[in-house]
Image (cartoon, rainbow, N blue to C red; front, side):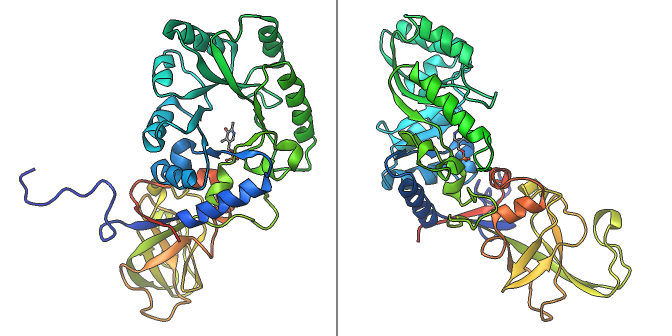
Length: 375
Ligand SMILES: *Cc1c(COP(=O)(O)O)cnc(C)c1O
């Protein structure tokens, strides 16, 4: 550039970044083992779509492979290609969204296994096998009652009546997905189980898979040959309303930019929506909605066990905290306060924002300094 300063690293340096995201790969290992044991008798795969729910598929995948995981799921062909580079030739990598038109060559070249969700996807993959003059591996998804992805009962009936339906294909997995697995009392779970059993019975003999994270906790009837957890690996509670059996994987801390005192009646932040009745001590931290913190997640930060509530609106790059309950001078610029961690879980942040932990994790932004620990 010729201006005499080095370019910032693409992953922000700890000194330059506004916030620090720590990812505990040891907790990830413990979560994988817990899920594998909970589904004993079935193989435990791992879902790494959306860059391993925002935590970094290139760091998560090798750790799970070390724990013995051999089967991985992503959403997109492009994610599968990137994961193939990380994992090498041996891992089975399934692509949940299947084949976008024209992606057959790239999918075959990377040795990915598309989850065929419709008759057109099945036909395209069969044509690719024929054009390449080789057998291609495939998974079949049936819609057991979610109306999102997978072949309907009518499509299943048509393809099972067609003797040429699977020519050139090695069907490795027959799967479906549960719509209500996190609500164990719902009758839909057993209805989907029943429908899946019926649909799978007419399809080629292959391993079967139904359960996501929450599905694992519905009991062994739901485990089949392979379970597909994502969220629970990353610490999200698979059994909402009950104590979380998973270890927390993510810790998010933001830096204090400055502190100040305000008088009673001063307007605080955009829109002056906060106007305190008494003087307060405030701290502004370097984290905002551009970092993936939801603008409506009016939560708190924590410092040495003390809760520091947000005050005023969440801004793009900053949030104001009420730090009046701390001793004067306790928080200096550069100090880190906890936003996600032992005092405030991902699920709690999600609840405050009327969303789910999945959306919180997958939104966490690229401006953070990321630290991977493996304790
Ligand atoms: C995302 C996804 C999973 C993993 O779900 P979690 O609830 O994160 O465990 C499993 N199967 C399918 C088809 C998915 O789309």
